[in-house]
Image (cartoon, rainbow, N blue to C red; front, side, top):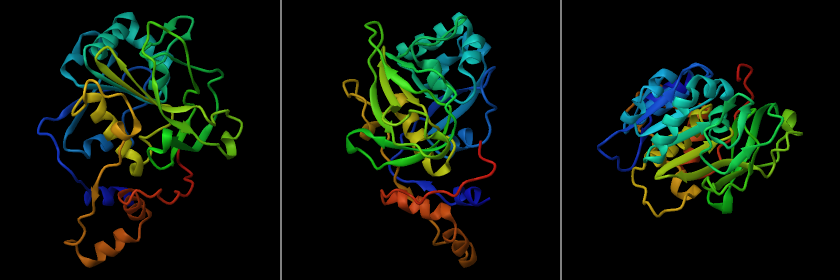
Length: 297
């Protein structure tokens, strides 16, 4: 596969802290299997170490050995039910005490205010809620960083929350980092346009970052996930610094060390769309759109 070949010859530029950020990825009931891009994307970075935890691990207090917990795709009501009251309280305590929470799609639902069903509660980590109905469709949708702090880009969407901010004095008000653009095709009637796509908040002394779309579904966008994890871990974050796209999700500096490869391998790499996407990202230009994939889900 082209992306696997490209991954072999990519390196992340810039200074790296000696200590790794330890990341727990929830893999229990209600989570999609931890395969595909999420875990490999994290492990491409030498300063991030990740492993999976179950709901029973979280209830047993194993989050205390980590800097960040990620809840990703799946069904948030099932994730909440699997955690139970003790597990949800353990996650809240972890974040309030300085841990990080990164929620993607179902994991974003889980962190919002309100209930998933009459019997399962959400984590309520920020003053924001989702708007029903949740079935909005799947496809590609543009996101626009707030205030022109970054170039628009395209992410995959799969029934992620349509978020609205709510008045809750007991919860921190989130900062909206990016908005959805105008969807097309199957998502044209989704009502996503102009609503929050990426949000961040400080919960206690911890950090919460929520993605309604999927930064974990495209290798060329995985820098969002890695940068988000770094921010959520608290590494290099000033306690007085307000969340903003420019401080949480700046594009990584990428190097393409291909000069030492055999000439046929260089020509093969440079002929791939991956190479063009990475060069565009390195030069802060929107990458060319990816062709539709029949097996994307």
